[in-house]
Image (cartoon, rainbow, N blue to C red; front, side):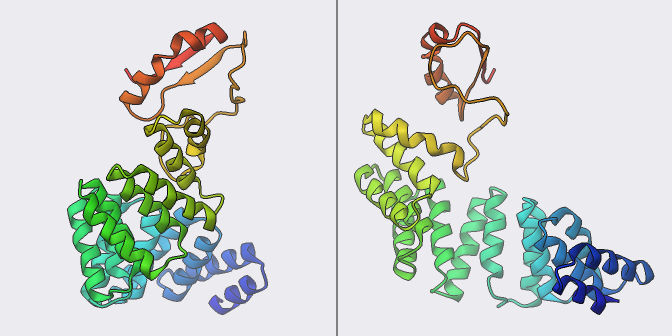
Length: 288
């Protein structure tokens, strides 16, 4: 039945394949192959929450299979369950200390869980095991910036770029390290290289805007700042089906929400009178 389900999936009949895998598991709940294949299929279909119990069960059925624990860890990381992901990757390393990418992924899980020093150590171990691991060099630079060590971060991201000079994300991170060192014009050049490689790179566009704003180049800065909602950053956007205000006078009720941190909101509230003149029915939603 497991083979039949796999054949159905190969024919593009995913719903039938899922039903067949589930019938196989109803007959034998400890059928490891069916748990594995059903979990992978659900993952490919973007149904990670449904895949999770199958990979967890598989881990119990194959407790010494490093590959199973690695896949489980990747799934947990994708679901932002960072502590559980880190535990899965540690189990991988217990079983196979040299398992490819396990230390890098453990570093990512620790960083996701805001354990900066521990993440730094794992990225260092990944680099020691493979000096060509460009992702570990790059991600360590992110942690170093967060820890207030931008000089070291710059060295790391430049090493990553030597390994992968065509990586737009690395050029964006290079700009971040330069920005942290107040080398704003050089940072803009790095962001420009990221955008040359990947014109739709929203983080690089947004970061370019921040550099312009720091240099009091407000027209360019606010224009690029509009890219913030397309970035991978959590900047406090309120999801709504309402149309975005274009700044023109309106008598309709206008929702104005505070973005990002309290400092940003204090700055934004300095424009409250100007907003009220154009939109008398404005309602402000800010941090208490």
